[in-house]
Image (cartoon, rainbow, N blue to C red; front, side, top):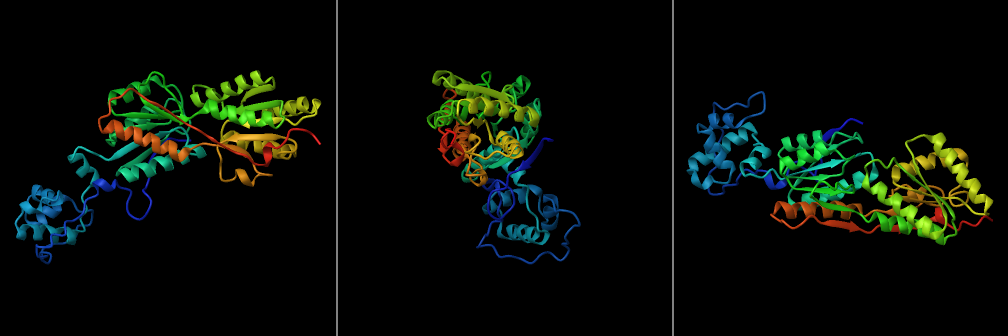
Length: 382
Protein backbone atom coordinates (compact mmCIF):
# COMPACT_ATOMS: atom_id res chain seq x y z
CA UNK A 1 0.00 0.00 0.00
CA UNK A 2 1.32 3.39 -0.93
CA UNK A 3 1.84 5.90 1.83
CA UNK A 4 -0.28 9.01 1.80
CA UNK A 5 -1.19 12.11 3.73
CA UNK A 6 -4.78 13.06 4.39
CA UNK A 7 -6.42 15.57 6.67
CA UNK A 8 -8.87 14.00 9.11
CA UNK A 9 -12.02 16.08 8.93
CA UNK A 10 -13.68 17.10 12.20
CA UNK A 11 -17.20 15.77 12.57
CA UNK A 12 -20.06 18.01 11.48
CA UNK A 13 -20.32 20.46 8.61
CA UNK A 14 -17.57 22.78 7.53
CA UNK A 15 -14.12 22.53 5.94
CA UNK A 16 -11.33 20.39 7.40
CA UNK A 17 -9.59 23.27 9.16
CA UNK A 18 -8.32 23.81 12.70
CA UNK A 19 -11.24 25.71 14.14
CA UNK A 20 -9.04 27.66 16.55
CA UNK A 21 -7.31 29.17 13.52
CA UNK A 22 -10.42 29.63 11.37
CA UNK A 23 -10.94 33.34 10.62
CA UNK A 24 -14.25 35.10 10.72
CA UNK A 25 -15.14 38.40 9.13
CA UNK A 26 -15.76 40.83 11.99
CA UNK A 27 -19.36 41.89 12.22
CA UNK A 28 -18.40 45.50 13.07
CA UNK A 29 -21.94 46.46 14.07
CA UNK A 30 -21.01 50.14 14.45
CA UNK A 31 -19.51 50.34 10.94
CA UNK A 32 -21.92 50.96 8.05
CA UNK A 33 -21.71 48.40 5.27
CA UNK A 34 -21.12 50.15 1.97
CA UNK A 35 -21.92 48.74 -1.45
CA UNK A 36 -19.07 47.32 -3.49
CA UNK A 37 -17.16 49.94 -5.49
CA UNK A 38 -18.47 50.12 -9.05
CA UNK A 39 -15.08 49.16 -10.52
CA UNK A 40 -14.89 45.96 -8.49
CA UNK A 41 -15.13 42.65 -10.28
CA UNK A 42 -14.53 39.06 -9.21
CA UNK A 43 -11.34 37.65 -10.77
CA UNK A 44 -11.44 34.34 -12.59
CA UNK A 45 -9.18 32.66 -10.03
CA UNK A 46 -9.30 32.67 -6.25
CA UNK A 47 -9.04 36.16 -4.82
CA UNK A 48 -5.88 37.11 -2.96
CA UNK A 49 -5.23 39.63 -0.22
CA UNK A 50 -3.66 41.83 -2.88
CA UNK A 51 -6.94 41.77 -4.83
CA UNK A 52 -8.84 42.85 -1.73
CA UNK A 53 -6.35 45.63 -0.99
CA UNK A 54 -6.51 46.91 -4.58
CA UNK A 55 -10.31 46.82 -4.64
CA UNK A 56 -10.59 48.63 -1.31
CA UNK A 57 -7.86 51.11 -2.16
CA UNK A 58 -5.77 50.18 0.90
CA UNK A 59 -2.53 48.34 1.63
CA UNK A 60 -2.26 44.60 2.22
CA UNK A 61 -1.18 45.37 5.80
CA UNK A 62 -4.50 47.15 6.35
CA UNK A 63 -6.44 44.12 5.10
CA UNK A 64 -4.33 41.88 7.34
CA UNK A 65 -5.13 44.07 10.37
CA UNK A 66 -8.82 43.79 9.52
CA UNK A 67 -8.68 39.97 9.59
CA UNK A 68 -6.62 39.92 12.77
CA UNK A 69 -9.52 41.56 14.60
CA UNK A 70 -7.77 44.92 14.75
CA UNK A 71 -10.50 46.78 12.89
CA UNK A 72 -10.61 49.16 15.86
CA UNK A 73 -7.34 50.58 14.51
CA UNK A 74 -9.08 51.41 11.22
CA UNK A 75 -11.41 54.28 10.52
CA UNK A 76 -15.04 53.29 9.93
CA UNK A 77 -14.73 54.28 6.27
CA UNK A 78 -11.66 52.09 5.66
CA UNK A 79 -13.12 49.14 7.58
CA UNK A 80 -16.31 49.38 5.54
CA UNK A 81 -14.37 49.49 2.25
CA UNK A 82 -12.37 46.39 3.21
CA UNK A 83 -15.52 44.58 4.30
CA UNK A 84 -17.26 45.42 1.02
CA UNK A 85 -14.27 44.23 -1.03
CA UNK A 86 -14.08 40.97 0.95
CA UNK A 87 -17.77 40.29 0.38
CA UNK A 88 -17.67 41.13 -3.31
CA UNK A 89 -14.60 39.00 -3.98
CA UNK A 90 -15.77 36.16 -1.72
CA UNK A 91 -12.30 36.31 -0.24
CA UNK A 92 -11.28 33.83 2.46
CA UNK A 93 -7.83 34.17 4.02
CA UNK A 94 -5.60 31.14 4.38
CA UNK A 95 -6.11 29.68 7.87
CA UNK A 96 -2.61 28.14 7.70
CA UNK A 97 -1.01 31.48 6.97
CA UNK A 98 -2.93 33.16 9.77
CA UNK A 99 -2.03 30.41 12.22
CA UNK A 100 1.65 30.59 11.35
CA UNK A 101 1.62 34.34 11.84
CA UNK A 102 0.46 33.66 15.36
CA UNK A 103 3.18 31.05 15.78
CA UNK A 104 0.77 28.09 16.02
CA UNK A 105 -0.44 25.80 13.23
CA UNK A 106 -2.91 23.89 15.46
CA UNK A 107 -1.93 20.74 13.56
CA UNK A 108 -0.98 17.35 15.02
CA UNK A 109 0.83 14.81 12.81
CA UNK A 110 -0.36 11.21 13.20
CA UNK A 111 1.73 8.42 11.63
CA UNK A 112 0.03 5.01 11.48
CA UNK A 113 1.53 1.71 10.39
CA UNK A 114 -1.49 0.56 8.38
CA UNK A 115 -4.73 2.46 7.99
CA UNK A 116 -6.49 -0.72 6.78
CA UNK A 117 -5.96 -2.27 10.22
CA UNK A 118 -9.12 -1.75 12.33
CA UNK A 119 -6.93 -0.96 15.34
CA UNK A 120 -5.25 1.97 13.56
CA UNK A 121 -8.58 3.39 12.39
CA UNK A 122 -10.11 3.11 15.87
CA UNK A 123 -7.15 4.84 17.55
CA UNK A 124 -7.27 7.55 14.86
CA UNK A 125 -10.92 8.21 15.70
CA UNK A 126 -10.11 8.59 19.38
CA UNK A 127 -7.15 10.88 18.69
CA UNK A 128 -9.08 13.00 16.17
CA UNK A 129 -11.94 13.50 18.60
CA UNK A 130 -9.58 14.57 21.39
CA UNK A 131 -7.73 16.93 19.02
CA UNK A 132 -10.96 18.49 17.83
CA UNK A 133 -12.06 19.14 21.40
CA UNK A 134 -8.73 20.86 22.07
CA UNK A 135 -8.89 22.96 18.89
CA UNK A 136 -6.43 20.96 16.78
CA UNK A 137 -6.63 19.24 13.42
CA UNK A 138 -5.06 15.82 12.75
CA UNK A 139 -2.94 15.25 9.66
CA UNK A 140 -2.55 11.55 8.88
CA UNK A 141 0.35 9.78 7.16
CA UNK A 142 -0.31 6.13 6.35
CA UNK A 143 2.87 4.03 6.14
CA UNK A 144 1.07 1.13 4.50
CA UNK A 145 3.21 -1.29 6.54
CA UNK A 146 6.25 -0.28 4.48
CA UNK A 147 9.27 -0.25 6.77
CA UNK A 148 11.74 2.56 6.30
CA UNK A 149 9.05 5.15 5.49
CA UNK A 150 8.90 6.78 8.91
CA UNK A 151 11.49 9.40 8.01
CA UNK A 152 9.53 10.40 4.91
CA UNK A 153 6.42 10.65 7.06
CA UNK A 154 8.08 12.89 9.62
CA UNK A 155 9.62 15.15 6.99
CA UNK A 156 6.33 15.45 5.10
CA UNK A 157 4.26 16.27 8.17
CA UNK A 158 6.92 18.67 9.47
CA UNK A 159 6.64 20.60 6.18
CA UNK A 160 3.05 21.36 7.18
CA UNK A 161 4.34 22.84 10.43
CA UNK A 162 2.67 20.28 12.71
CA UNK A 163 3.23 21.11 16.35
CA UNK A 164 3.80 17.52 17.47
CA UNK A 165 3.72 13.87 16.41
CA UNK A 166 1.78 10.78 17.45
CA UNK A 167 3.63 7.77 16.07
CA UNK A 168 2.37 4.24 15.45
CA UNK A 169 5.46 2.88 13.76
CA UNK A 170 6.26 -0.01 11.41
CA UNK A 171 9.77 -0.96 12.54
CA UNK A 172 12.94 0.26 14.20
CA UNK A 173 13.99 3.03 11.81
CA UNK A 174 16.90 4.77 13.54
CA UNK A 175 17.14 7.41 10.81
CA UNK A 176 13.50 8.31 11.28
CA UNK A 177 13.90 8.69 15.01
CA UNK A 178 16.97 10.87 14.51
CA UNK A 179 14.99 13.03 12.09
CA UNK A 180 12.14 13.27 14.57
CA UNK A 181 14.53 14.36 17.31
CA UNK A 182 16.12 16.91 14.96
CA UNK A 183 12.72 18.46 14.28
CA UNK A 184 12.54 19.13 18.04
CA UNK A 185 8.80 18.61 18.22
CA UNK A 186 7.08 16.68 21.02
CA UNK A 187 6.28 13.04 20.20
CA UNK A 188 4.13 10.30 21.69
CA UNK A 189 4.43 6.63 20.72
CA UNK A 190 1.30 4.48 20.46
CA UNK A 191 1.29 0.65 20.63
CA UNK A 192 4.90 0.22 19.45
CA UNK A 193 7.90 1.09 21.56
CA UNK A 194 11.24 2.64 20.63
CA UNK A 195 13.77 2.37 23.43
CA UNK A 196 16.14 4.85 21.76
CA UNK A 197 13.54 7.64 21.72
CA UNK A 198 12.79 9.59 24.89
CA UNK A 199 9.05 9.95 24.42
CA UNK A 200 5.80 9.18 26.20
CA UNK A 201 4.38 5.75 25.35
CA UNK A 202 0.70 4.73 25.34
CA UNK A 203 -0.39 1.14 24.77
CA UNK A 204 -2.62 -1.75 25.71
CA UNK A 205 -1.18 -3.77 28.60
CA UNK A 206 -0.23 -6.56 26.21
CA UNK A 207 1.20 -8.91 28.83
CA UNK A 208 -1.92 -8.80 31.02
CA UNK A 209 -4.22 -9.07 27.99
CA UNK A 210 -2.43 -12.14 26.59
CA UNK A 211 -2.51 -13.77 30.04
CA UNK A 212 -6.25 -13.10 30.32
CA UNK A 213 -6.92 -14.63 26.89
CA UNK A 214 -4.92 -17.80 27.45
CA UNK A 215 -6.13 -18.27 31.04
CA UNK A 216 -9.70 -18.14 29.76
CA UNK A 217 -8.96 -21.03 27.36
CA UNK A 218 -7.10 -22.97 30.04
CA UNK A 219 -10.02 -22.58 32.44
CA UNK A 220 -12.33 -23.91 29.68
CA UNK A 221 -10.20 -27.06 29.40
CA UNK A 222 -8.00 -26.29 26.38
CA UNK A 223 -4.57 -27.91 26.57
CA UNK A 224 -3.37 -27.47 22.96
CA UNK A 225 -3.32 -23.81 21.91
CA UNK A 226 -1.77 -22.07 18.91
CA UNK A 227 -0.96 -18.35 19.00
CA UNK A 228 -1.11 -16.93 15.44
CA UNK A 229 0.57 -13.58 14.89
CA UNK A 230 1.87 -11.47 12.05
CA UNK A 231 5.70 -11.63 11.81
CA UNK A 232 7.13 -10.40 15.12
CA UNK A 233 9.95 -8.38 13.51
CA UNK A 234 10.58 -5.17 15.51
CA UNK A 235 6.97 -4.68 16.61
CA UNK A 236 7.01 -4.56 20.40
CA UNK A 237 3.28 -5.26 20.89
CA UNK A 238 3.54 -8.52 18.92
CA UNK A 239 6.60 -9.61 20.91
CA UNK A 240 4.93 -8.81 24.24
CA UNK A 241 1.82 -10.82 23.42
CA UNK A 242 3.78 -13.81 22.10
CA UNK A 243 6.16 -13.85 25.09
CA UNK A 244 3.29 -13.60 27.58
CA UNK A 245 1.51 -16.46 25.82
CA UNK A 246 4.61 -18.67 25.92
CA UNK A 247 5.32 -17.89 29.57
CA UNK A 248 1.80 -18.78 30.73
CA UNK A 249 1.62 -21.88 28.52
CA UNK A 250 4.81 -23.14 30.14
CA UNK A 251 3.69 -22.40 33.69
CA UNK A 252 0.23 -23.91 33.06
CA UNK A 253 1.75 -27.06 31.59
CA UNK A 254 -0.14 -26.91 28.28
CA UNK A 255 1.05 -27.36 24.70
CA UNK A 256 1.49 -23.84 23.41
CA UNK A 257 2.99 -22.88 20.06
CA UNK A 258 3.56 -19.51 18.36
CA UNK A 259 3.08 -19.28 14.58
CA UNK A 260 4.28 -16.21 12.71
CA UNK A 261 1.93 -16.02 9.75
CA UNK A 262 2.63 -14.03 6.58
CA UNK A 263 -0.53 -14.80 4.67
CA UNK A 264 0.42 -18.32 3.55
CA UNK A 265 -2.88 -20.20 3.84
CA UNK A 266 -1.41 -23.72 3.20
CA UNK A 267 1.07 -23.25 6.06
CA UNK A 268 -1.69 -22.05 8.39
CA UNK A 269 -3.97 -24.90 7.32
CA UNK A 270 -1.24 -27.46 8.04
CA UNK A 271 -0.55 -25.92 11.46
CA UNK A 272 -4.24 -26.03 12.39
CA UNK A 273 -4.56 -29.66 11.33
CA UNK A 274 -1.50 -30.65 13.42
CA UNK A 275 -3.01 -28.79 16.35
CA UNK A 276 -6.36 -30.53 15.94
CA UNK A 277 -4.80 -33.98 15.68
CA UNK A 278 -2.77 -33.47 18.85
CA UNK A 279 -5.76 -32.12 20.79
CA UNK A 280 -8.15 -34.82 19.54
CA UNK A 281 -5.69 -37.49 20.66
CA UNK A 282 -6.27 -36.23 24.20
CA UNK A 283 -10.04 -36.05 23.73
CA UNK A 284 -9.97 -32.25 23.52
CA UNK A 285 -10.59 -29.43 21.07
CA UNK A 286 -7.72 -27.32 19.73
CA UNK A 287 -7.63 -23.66 20.73
CA UNK A 288 -6.34 -20.64 18.81
CA UNK A 289 -5.49 -17.10 19.85
CA UNK A 290 -4.85 -14.51 17.14
CA UNK A 291 -2.67 -11.44 17.65
CA UNK A 292 -4.94 -8.93 15.86
CA UNK A 293 -7.92 -8.54 13.53
CA UNK A 294 -5.76 -9.15 10.46
CA UNK A 295 -4.75 -12.64 11.62
CA UNK A 296 -8.31 -13.31 12.78
CA UNK A 297 -9.54 -12.87 9.21
CA UNK A 298 -6.80 -15.16 7.91
CA UNK A 299 -7.71 -17.88 10.40
CA UNK A 300 -11.41 -17.43 9.61
CA UNK A 301 -10.70 -17.97 5.91
CA UNK A 302 -8.82 -21.21 6.56
CA UNK A 303 -11.38 -22.47 9.09
CA UNK A 304 -14.17 -21.91 6.56
CA UNK A 305 -12.18 -23.83 3.94
CA UNK A 306 -11.71 -26.74 6.34
CA UNK A 307 -15.43 -26.85 7.08
CA UNK A 308 -14.82 -26.48 10.81
CA UNK A 309 -17.23 -24.82 13.20
CA UNK A 310 -16.17 -22.27 15.80
CA UNK A 311 -16.65 -23.50 19.33
CA UNK A 312 -17.15 -27.09 18.21
CA UNK A 313 -14.05 -27.98 16.15
CA UNK A 314 -11.94 -25.02 17.23
CA UNK A 315 -11.86 -22.86 20.33
CA UNK A 316 -10.93 -19.26 19.61
CA UNK A 317 -10.00 -15.87 21.07
CA UNK A 318 -8.73 -12.94 18.99
CA UNK A 319 -7.21 -9.58 19.84
CA UNK A 320 -9.35 -6.63 18.61
CA UNK A 321 -13.12 -6.63 19.01
CA UNK A 322 -14.37 -5.83 15.51
CA UNK A 323 -17.96 -5.09 14.52
CA UNK A 324 -18.19 -8.46 12.76
CA UNK A 325 -16.80 -10.60 15.62
CA UNK A 326 -20.26 -11.29 17.12
CA UNK A 327 -21.60 -12.29 13.70
CA UNK A 328 -19.26 -15.21 12.88
CA UNK A 329 -20.54 -18.62 13.98
CA UNK A 330 -21.63 -18.55 17.61
CA UNK A 331 -19.72 -15.29 18.02
CA UNK A 332 -15.97 -14.85 18.34
CA UNK A 333 -14.52 -14.27 21.80
CA UNK A 334 -12.16 -11.30 21.65
CA UNK A 335 -9.88 -9.05 23.67
CA UNK A 336 -11.24 -5.54 23.12
CA UNK A 337 -8.57 -2.86 23.08
CA UNK A 338 -9.49 0.55 24.57
CA UNK A 339 -8.75 2.24 21.24
CA UNK A 340 -10.69 5.43 21.94
CA UNK A 341 -8.96 5.84 25.30
CA UNK A 342 -5.56 5.12 23.71
CA UNK A 343 -6.04 7.88 21.14
CA UNK A 344 -7.27 10.29 23.81
CA UNK A 345 -4.38 9.48 26.18
CA UNK A 346 -1.84 10.01 23.40
CA UNK A 347 -3.29 13.43 22.59
CA UNK A 348 -3.39 14.41 26.27
CA UNK A 349 0.28 13.49 26.66
CA UNK A 350 1.19 15.50 23.58
CA UNK A 351 -0.80 18.56 24.63
CA UNK A 352 0.91 18.54 28.02
CA UNK A 353 4.29 18.59 26.25
CA UNK A 354 3.14 21.40 23.96
CA UNK A 355 2.12 23.35 27.06
CA UNK A 356 5.64 23.06 28.49
CA UNK A 357 5.64 19.84 30.55
CA UNK A 358 9.22 18.62 31.09
CA UNK A 359 8.73 15.51 33.25
CA UNK A 360 10.44 12.23 32.36
CA UNK A 361 8.84 10.12 29.60
CA UNK A 362 5.84 8.19 30.88
CA UNK A 363 4.49 4.75 30.04
CA UNK A 364 0.71 4.50 30.10
CA UNK A 365 -0.65 0.94 29.81
CA UNK A 366 -4.40 0.52 29.58
CA UNK A 367 -6.30 -2.72 30.31
CA UNK A 368 -8.10 -4.76 27.66
CA UNK A 369 -11.53 -6.32 28.12
CA UNK A 370 -12.41 -9.95 27.43
CA UNK A 371 -15.60 -10.23 25.36
CA UNK A 372 -16.73 -13.84 25.92
CA UNK A 373 -18.80 -15.43 23.15
CA UNK A 374 -19.50 -18.94 21.87
CA UNK A 375 -16.14 -19.61 20.18
CA UNK A 376 -14.38 -20.23 23.51
CA UNK A 377 -16.78 -22.67 25.13
CA UNK A 378 -15.64 -25.90 26.81
CA UNK A 379 -12.82 -27.81 25.08
CA UNK A 380 -14.16 -31.26 26.00
CA UNK A 381 -15.25 -33.28 22.95
CA UNK A 382 -18.81 -34.62 23.11
